[in-house]
Length: 164
Image: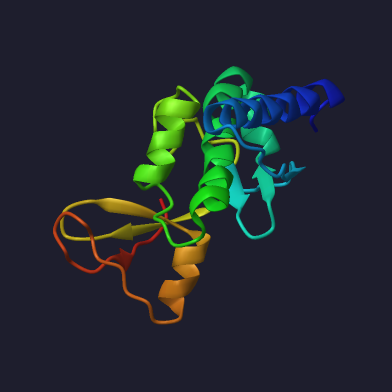
């Protein structure tokens, strides 16, 4: 559970990001609603049409400093791109990269590198011709319904193996 101080720090960082964008573009931007209920391995998400930011409280708590420096600007940049360019631009395209590097002054990384062991769900062991793979419960359930996944290396189908 996040403390009020932790929530306020994140909300303040969102405001700081918007202030930077308003100074850079010399125009106002609509502020989003903020929720702390993102689940799974995702650090944060931007819901464009809803003007909503969702953050993962577990990953935030475990990585507070870098979360504020990188995840918050990353998600705010998605909403800024939407307000500036509409929905018909790639999620991590040149418009988003420009805002990350020129406005937020942060590297334009698409994904975080946090340890996700505390939020990772159950996985299932699969095998191809060259290695073992761990599939999420979502992908495992899709396999049971007929979806077939191929190894990106050897291009052979993944087969369920007995758990060790």
